[in-house]
Image (cartoon, rainbow, N blue to C red; front, side):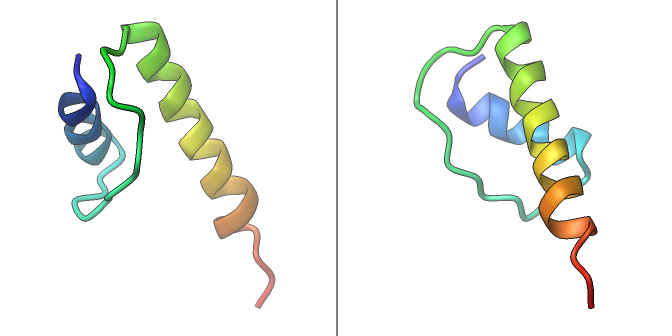
Length: 53
């Protein structure tokens, strides 16, 4: 999948319709896509969800 397809899929699967991430312009394999998705979820859990108020 290309850059735009990967971004569109992330928006849909993560339910983030306004997600506007910057990713490299290249063809992504399913394995690369899944790793990118896991990394985004981990980032969210580590730096967004766990912030103390």
